[in-house]
Length: 271
Image (cartoon, rainbow, N blue to C red; front, side, top):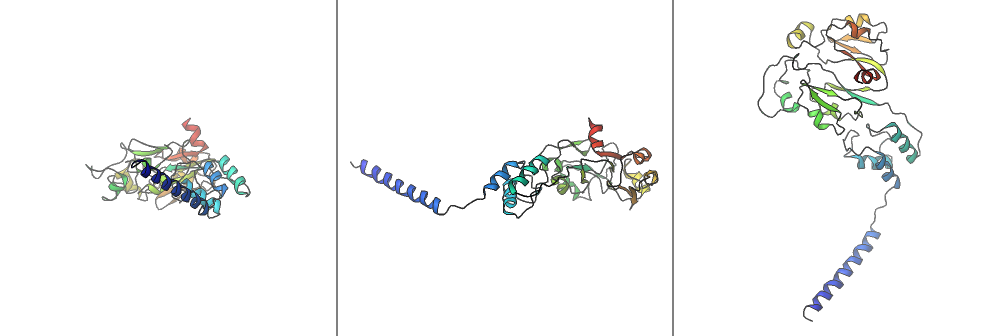
């Protein structure tokens, strides 16, 4: 009896406490919008942060509450967006598929270095030391901060610079925000156009000394374009993808071969 009575008492206390907790859970239950769970199931689940929220669950909650647009997730597919619009009872929205583009072609055999650092090698660390180990202040450093940040396996480092695997890229933009040198940009996937793999604003003479693959601002591409899509500003060629027809005249004239196809043209050449 000395053992049985404490056991019975403890059992009764547990039963009472359990009942109290069960009642409390019902009384203080927070009602959730059923749409939140449906929206969450349609998001990629990568928790990349490209939407500006802590993760996909937080993004879904904001969409359900009306605190974020239905297309808040930059990495969502067109099909999933259509379903979210249906869940939220709003008109269907079109999504322009985007992909990251590396605005640098300064590979190891083309770029000159100012120093070789023996220590922690992340782009952020190296960028803090004299703007980087490459002489070009605008160059991709190639230590893979963007690769680590990508939750979709769409980036790799090849020959000292980042490479985007366009088919896998969802256009979330996390890599763009991560790059300390700002050499990554988002470009539309559904167009046939050209872009420049360089970010340098150095003059041509200086560029020839530091990188054999940099834009020298020669304007041959600008003169070759019959549609006014190419302009050389601050010693750097820029292409307006809205005006570009994908004819390739600028790429043919570029002496540095750094004007390349993007969007559908890029994917077709990769395959």
